[in-house]
Amino acid sequence: MNVLVVGSGGREHALCWKLNDSAKVDRVFAAPGNGGTAREATNVAVKDDDIDGLIKLAKAEKVGLVVVGPEAPLVKGLADALAAEGIPCFGPSAYAAQLEGSKAFAKNVMRAAGVPTAAFGVFDDAEAARAYVREKGAPLVVKADGLAAGKGVVVARTVEEALGAIDDMMVAKSFGAAGARVVVEDALVGEEASFLAFCDGENYALLPSAQDHKAVGEGDTGPNTGGMGAYSPAPVLPEAKYAETAELCIRPILRHLAAAGHPFKGVLYAGLMFTKDGPMVLEYNVRFGDPECQPLLMRLDSDLVDIMFACAGGSLKPDMVRVRPETALCVVVAAPGYPGSYPKGMAISGLDEADKLPGVKVFQAGTKVDGGKTVTSGGRVLGVTALGATLSEAKAKAYEAVAKVGFEGCYFRRDIGDKGINRTK
Ligand code: AMP
Ligand code: GLY
Image 1 (cartoon, rainbow, N blue to C red):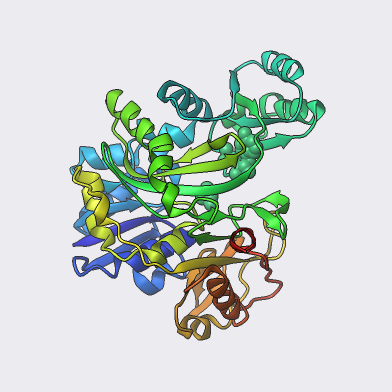
Image 2: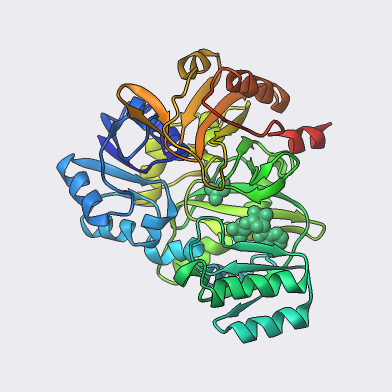
């Protein structure tokens, strides 16, 4: 069978790599892909949100399964368009994708389904939002309703900061239409973890816990990024708690969407915060996290195509997802200046040397092949990932591999995994 992976990040490189493992897969295509997917798949220059172009490509290459990496095409209706053509798709419908595409939708579903989440208000009117902020007092979190590339969330420590965020989103319209509506919610305190489940509309099969590092700087300082590193499992959510946590944050959503006539098929990502009152859901994503996908797929010990087909076809069984006992840890190597502006086109050295280390895989994100050389083309450039018997061992192996790669001005956080290591001490 031929498989088409949609997207161009480190997540998509990992997806292509893992899909290639399956004896059922003949060819993997990536649209548009990157320098890493070019090593595992055939890149085709179709944009990830060009729905007509993707359908044409899927038909031309007799694709038997489309795997959608990022959220934007799902929110735009790629899964629905593929369904109309009878092409199996791993990823939810546009209706179900609103869980990520609209924070207000997600909060209302959480409330209706009884999922623990921060108290909130939804506002289409800036004055009403300001009044809510003044009444509630700080700290508060202000979120643009729509997709804002991970930048539409402001954790405000003061009332003034919250009011500023409202002005920025609703009056200055810095996120365009995505900020016309805002969610204002209570600020929660605790350690975060990512908990992902394969879903077939009714049943789920859990992946192990993971933890992202969203802030650019060590010790979780500085502006937020797409994620500077991740590892799995995350000791803050141990295996003994998976079942009850899933019943709290996965099952109610599946039931709610199925009852609404829009069953969720794909991977549901719950962004959790472990507060003193128990786990609370901060957000849902309707796709794999990036970089969480890289360590999760490195641990996956079963056929990804079987799982994805079962999700699309409604025949998922929990034991289809088998996971290696080791810990996997991914360190993102970024371009100088990221998450602000950064240069592109820098030659990357040491890729093959790092890849040769046992238990190491270098996933590429913002890269492309230019004249036979791999050069940078984005902010998050590499996701250097390693398996180890323990979290400390995975960390040591990943950083040993990081030391072998390089490009001008590259940087990375040196503390990926430390929250987990400290917790297990
Ligand atoms: P979101 O896109 O909703 O996950 O928000 C991005 C980040 O903002 C999260 O990973 C948290 O670090 C932070 N955040 C979101 N909601 C809250 C909240 N209610 N309380 C505290 N921090 C939050
Ligand atoms: N790593 C967080 C995300 O993919 O949204």
